Picture (tube, rainbow, N blue to C red):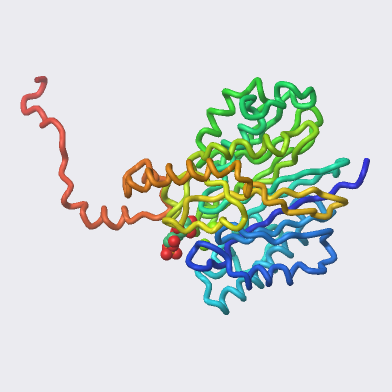
Length: 373
Ligand code: F6R
Ligand code: MG
Ligand code: MG
């Protein structure tokens, strides 16, 4: 057995430029400086999508390593300091605590990590999205690992034909459950079709038992007990040789699906696949964006990123997303563009209701005057 490496992606919004649309280059410089030369890491890459900073790190210390999480926490603290100096919008917004407590999960930043033995060649894709929530990965992960109309490898590659095991989190009850596909496909879909509550956390190959994909699944607002933005999620997918080909992992995004998020975390919009240079959501703070960074790992070194959605073959998806966005915007404050009351991150309802309560009167049939009639 060779030595295992860990790929950790830890992300946070610690200040937007301008508003919630992007990150000032000085914050990215601070992140670079804070990670440079760190002895814990084999390699790192600092990326951005929308107003989120993504720290992509390789090391040998496994998932949930307190030292690695603490390192990421300190990077975000340093970036927050830069954000405060430049009076960036919402400086420090995702850091929910004053002090680090051993694991960055539950403290605000999003985390996706996996540990594996590096294969002879190790292509990975890191997907990062802005203005949406972790359930946004349910649809594409299902397509990649379970839908033969998306992934022909499920049908014709003997190393994929046995299917994949999906681990799903119930974010409300904090429970986990596994499904073996293809035979439990219908059971899985009952849950993951409700992405605001049930999220695919990880996917394993049933042929090799190898980890194939892992996503970030925290719900910041449930943790903080107040609105602190949607939990713009990240997802790692390993590719090729018995796992989806790079093209099969990208293919679900050619048909932009609808996700919760967008303006004030309270709307439905299409998830638009974009190149890294177009990852600044501005129209109505959106529409939600997703980037795909491809890396080849070489002894833990991150060779890349290759900007995979920069391909002109995704122009059509962007056009479709813009058309869907235009149509949904025309609905203004009406559902289904605006989320149902219980899913909105912002609402004035309690205040409006308490002011108008006395004006509500009962409607319905009058009570019978004579008993028994
Ligand atoms: C959505 C998001 C933005 C803000 C919006 C209002 O996740 O971050 O759409 O919700 O710009 O922001 P505030 O309330 O800070 O003025
Ligand atoms: Mg923000
Ligand atoms: Mg964001």
